[in-house]
Image (cartoon, rainbow, N blue to C red; front, side, top):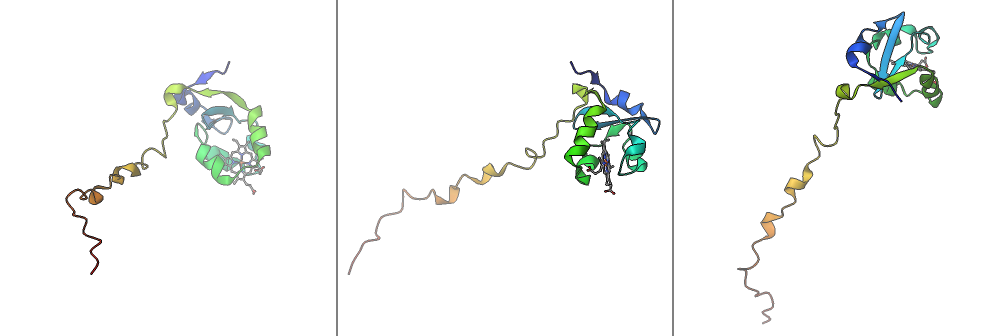
Length: 117
Ligand code: HEM
């Protein structure tokens, strides 16, 4: 079973010789990988001890990079620290305008459309 690790604990490992990083709510100890990272040591230092999901994804890492990641997996981010990101629900309420109120004035309108002279 996966070990749960709090963000506070991850934060304690924010040094180049003790480097943990959170990616997609999973915690990785990439201390040993730091010097091998093709993207440089500094880039990993920048996200040491915190959530680097955004940075990791923005680079467009290959599947191989994700395979490498697996080797350094040490546990899951504690449920209490998982942000309830809801990029969809915050802005997606377009249904409010679907009432169609302007087309409701039909009953009183007499049907005089067929007067032929
Ligand atoms: C900690 C987990 C990470 C692993 C296992 C990893 C692995 C890799 C690998 C294998 C590559 C070679 C290209 C590829 O296969 O995609 C790469 C490139 C790169 N990585 Fe990472 N990476 C990690 C995190 C990061 C983070 C957090 C950043 C940015 C803040 C970053 C920035 C880069 C950059 C800029 C390159 C491109 C280097 C180049 O093409 O010159 N990486 N990484």
